[in-house]
Length: 363
Picture 1: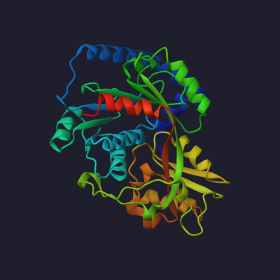
Picture 2: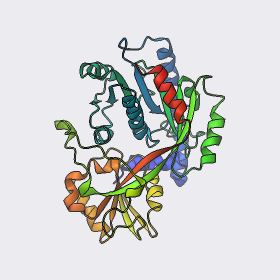
Picture 3: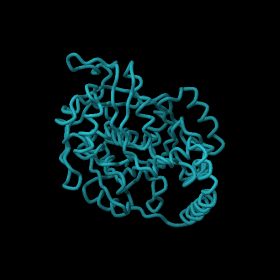
């Protein structure tokens, strides 16, 4: 299950913790003040400090202001695809905490090196050694020891940008930190096109004059039986590449007897913002959505899978792609189980972001 600390934190951050949440929010005021001061001092240091770089080896950072769940990983994959189309040889630099995201990158772009390392400077060296000519820092906005040619920040249109900073709220930095960004991409799942436009307008006074703005939404592309989802091994032993999967709106319901709209389902997930999964699955069912949720980055066990199957009964189980890469070895125990594969669809700003990458990052 979700760790009690993580669950309580999200309740406090969303102001749903009741009296206990309100008391905790007040008690955390000094800690938030300390965090804000520490981030300010840290940023002033890096503003004056020479950052680590390799001559002729550009870096693109993809990050955010809030804790998880904004869509950094699929946007990183889109950037990788764009760079490959331009003839570049990108490598993805992933931190130690994002092993499941690394697995997902191997699934989406199996021919692209994914280097998991706590010290991004070391992984940058390794990227050059394995033949890459450009590096993508996944979740890199606050990792300022490594210099970058492009700083792209991802914001969720559903977020309340008046929320406090950690640990009292979900934000690592205040909105004013966006002055460092070269591009800001607003993502939306339940928010409307107008919501994204209005957020973009509110951000304009904060952004630098040359900052590029864009917006995109995530749509369900297809449902794939977990047993047909490419298995990619264990990251600790070195991943075996799988074939790339092309998402298509016409492939939903490809299995005989399967229909996109179901009556009742169980969602099994271990992501940062499980409400995003519920919103997505809600569009695929005409009945109830039950959820078995674990902490972000949790690695499922056979006991977890057995518990999910027992709880689901005759209902199908739905999982995200991030969950699926950790569940393929249990596919025989969890049937029927389907992977909700999504694709990103740009609202606006795609060409501006593409031009920025070509101008500043493509060698």
